[in-house]
Image (tube, rainbow, N blue to C red):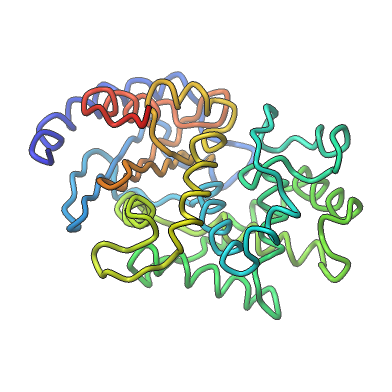
Length: 311
């Protein structure tokens, strides 16, 4: 299969790259606006660490919302299902990822799911750590373990840029505090800094594919045999990726590609072919829903060609 993938990947990447003209690089976080709009790269990693790569696969980008999958897993390991789902729901919201509309309109006033911003902020508050520095240290350690490298770092410029422009996220967090979703002991500004930091972890396609591979194999790193996450929690995360992972285009992506995926506004997409491959994609030009236009097209094309759909 890898021979087939490698043979066809260059043509598919060239074809999908043309879709970048229909998107725009995220500019509401100024540091993200510096990314090359016409870039598209991909790494596909198999069980033994074999890879197929093409395009701008070595381009560094920040995880942004992709990080929410792994903070959810860490919170589940820290608090269990009951602890996490007392604070966030399990349903798609149908609203923009940074909307606060249903927090006020729908009882009991908790975020609909862990992958929208309000839900991810609530989940971040559940990660154990005596101080904000200890929390982000634990998060970064977990990310590094999943990626199989100690090279992952927080892009401080992006984190500062996020903090300076995060008026909506600040509003969401204070609303959660007022709704008692965030505990009385939680300092909102300290919590938000942890949130900005984990969204600003810098990565490339190969490192992201390795993280995806761990999820593709049920929480076990197939390259080391080490279990990083209980299988039950990986199932929960993959379910959210299918139903909520591609923002308001999650249903369409499920129909067209049919694989668990999570996107971020840096243009990254982490995708999983369960029991087979972990995939990391970057294409900074985003469509209306906040997903990489070229990256989505590429994954849909490959899924159709190799019959990857779960459905």
